[in-house]
Length: 601
Ligand SMILES: Nc1ncnc2c1ncn2[C@@H]1O[C@H](COP(=O)(O)OP(=O)(O)OP(=O)(O)O)[C@@H](O)[C@H]1O
Ligand SMILES: [Mg+2]
Image (cartoon, rainbow, N blue to C red; front, top):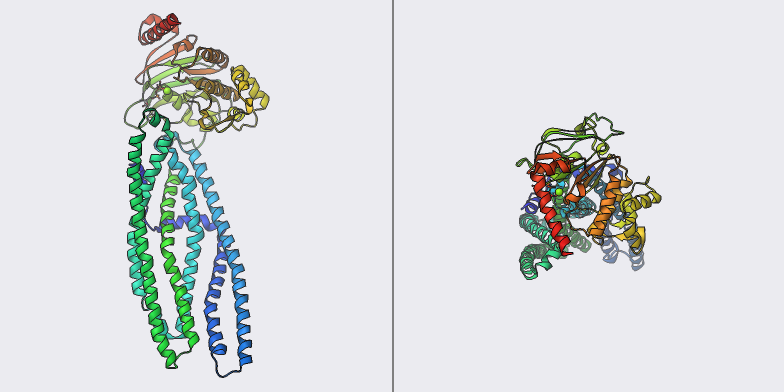
């Protein structure tokens, strides 16, 4: 399955991806530089602290050669210096954290903008292939993971490198033998980290794959809850969910177990090293070879040295998720739009509204032809209706007219200009569409008619709503034109949504109007309203209507009958009835239904 593949592909670390990630940080290099310098200063203060304590112990506290007064004064001096250093380090640290977080948020903000901008450019076929949930994750979760990487991993990396280098230098300059002992367990640590890395990345991928599975299952079943409840499949779904939930749990437990073994093993190595240090260091103190403060400093440095090692598992996790997220984001950003604007577009300011399809062949997937050799002509101002069984290719014709997809063979012309020679936006500007399933955005009625176009005034909205008969139902809503509409408009009936869509199409006053009639049953009253609105809408515009109720289209200038992607009949209602072909049969079928309905009532 696709969601599994996408989770598996990421490598734990990939220089190419890292390089590209760093390019996003480039505009902020100055902030990052300051941040790194700040980290360096904080590290120096961390290294200074054991040194100061060592000085206090060996020069004053544990020094038999000076007086009590001198000792106390010395301790106070070093103590004050210690306080000054930790205060300054605190302030620097605060500034550093703020700066780096700020930079991270900035980078991620830009990235989110870039991804959304790119998404809007992609062709519809891309959205046919990619589920919504996945794309949302790209913009939200995946960018967040990157933020964590920029802020915690990159800075910590500097911190760790500085700290380790500083400690090694400090240790060596204090005492070569003790330094050697403190670092003697390094091969053990490296081996442990190597094994951990191997196991952890496998476990991590398993967790991700199974989480993706849970996500996919949930989003599908929450959107489809109505069907689940309607068909009483709750128990079966529960079982299915239990299975994938258990798998996810197992994967998590596996990851935790690996971590649970790693962390304590490092603890053991740490304790072992500490014991060695005290063993040899203690003997040297007794033998008078070193002073007590030096041993103290070593013990302290050892603890600081192990901190990055303890933290590494966490950072490794972040780095790994970041690589996976980055790879997915980059794949998305690298996806090219399939329908491209021409290099030298022909401007299309005004159109008369002539539409021609010339021997158009089209397939969505490159396998089956959905439209085969389709040719027709619509003159400016004419109304043409398409009829045909479900799946005949009616909606596809509209998709092609708006150039949501490119055709494989033939030509589509508007006012004699091939639509591939104009910019997609210029083309769509002239076409108003009422789609088969009307989509409403979260907001209110007004914003759904206006769609953020500031040129459309409130008065325009009332005018068009009245014109298309939407006004009656809108004014009955609790807050009239300001009534809230939820996602997809599920609080309105299908007929109401259709009227609203008419208002929306009319508000933009397009030269070409396309109506894809909803198949849903609509009561006779609403049907009458829609019918009436339609008649007004089509005036002075080239109109393509896809009708399921043949009563809608009897007045059309031309009716085109599609059958399995081919045009089978063209003519007016009367001509086609006389022909006694496909249209005649369709009409008789519906007519019979209507007759029996009217008999019942
Ligand atoms: N986005 C798509 N990707 C792949 N195939 C598609 C897509 N949309 C439609 N099809 C296929 O193209 C064919 C024609 O579909 P189309 O939507 O044009 O039919 P239609 O005539 O509008 O049907 P209906 O009356 O049910 O709306 C169908 O076989 C359908 O499976
Ligand atoms: Mg359709």
